[in-house]
Length: 607
Image 1 (cartoon, helix red, strand yellow):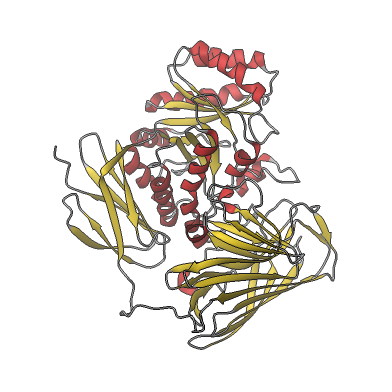
Image 2 (image 1 turned 90 degrees about the vertical axis):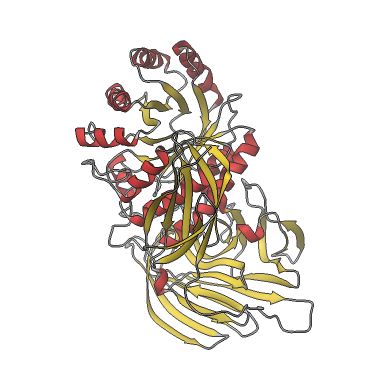
């Protein structure tokens, strides 16, 4: 879970500030703002996605640090880095020193030495290693345990609900046919979790084991020392080479491919009605109606006073826009009188109820006893309405809680990219894991998936050990990047992963308006408004490939009149040249501005 950062504190890491490093045949980058050693590669194969230090408070919030006193030395095949890190939160008085070295034989070591300046509570402090999912998913590995024993196993292919590897001292896996990578873990007992549970595109090896008590008090003066070592192993006597291809310098062209022969009918897409704003003004209503969303989600808490008024507001807006209603229904099993009142209100409305997401306050997944009374209510409405069980929180809760789905109906969960990190590159990396979560949910429940709601920051903290006031929680959910071109590009990448997936039944994104919305509270456009306009106007979507997915995202669409469009988003801070095929198969080359989205009309389809 992310920390409560102000706009000035929010770390939006600039890729242009990354330090390029080499350790023998390995290439990587260092982020001097966060202390992350990222994208350690042998040729084009990612060996390790990242090595970094994480401090998590008693609510699992990630504590931000200020990095200073950087010292470095580099050569063509080795390097040495040192820096100091100081907590930006007064209630976590902790500082640490980082020392990273890379040797000519490909050995990398990341050392962490921390000191508590005062007493505080933590859930976890220590080094983390991220293993990439593209290279590791389903692949064999050898885990060495703290007692010296070894286990031959594999990285999970479907998302594992629990820690696949425990009591770790080291882990080894193949990088290519003649090279293996060994990660050795020192100073603590480590274990691995499948971070795709929170749509992080990695497996994370971390300390301290979750089986141990948390939170715990860290006393003033406590020192923490840990290290991670990465070494390359080969059975050959010759040195490992990177087999680099010859070529000129400069930014490579990003190549986009479109499969125009594989059309996917666009799933319903809608928006969440804001929890803390007044009735949508006329300018907001007009703009939303122009976008023509398929539905609006209304959260109805039957135990709270005034739910009837809020639902009436959403029904009015949905009626104006010709949209249906997605209801997040929060109830206890004994609230049948309130259900009768809800039924009467729905019967009086002309708005179609598309689906009901059934939740119980205080429970992470839908209890079995809630389904029957909700099913009885929707049956009285006389039309087909999905009764959806699942979680209002992360896929992790669905994967671990595993509620009993309604036969033939979807299951649901929410997505946000900032459970563990909040810089731009980390957010971009999460896009790869979104479709993995759908694959696993569909396989686990043998059903389709309704994802509701997708947001930039967590809407609430399901794992907090301290309750927050509603206004504080809503404030924490605001990301200052919401109106920006980066957010628009991230949304486009998310739609490209989810809206083209055959198992996605419906999608709900953000709030309809306001600081967590797709529009301003006054009805003004955000950068992402154009993305939703492009997608909501479409009838069919097409699979798109891109050879620089951390930088460029794209989605192809066709409307009911046969008009085709290609939307291209740039997640980076540099102008990027892309090459894409038009409908006739001819290549087109153009430049996409930094952190922006272009929607390109193409020749209409001819039958």
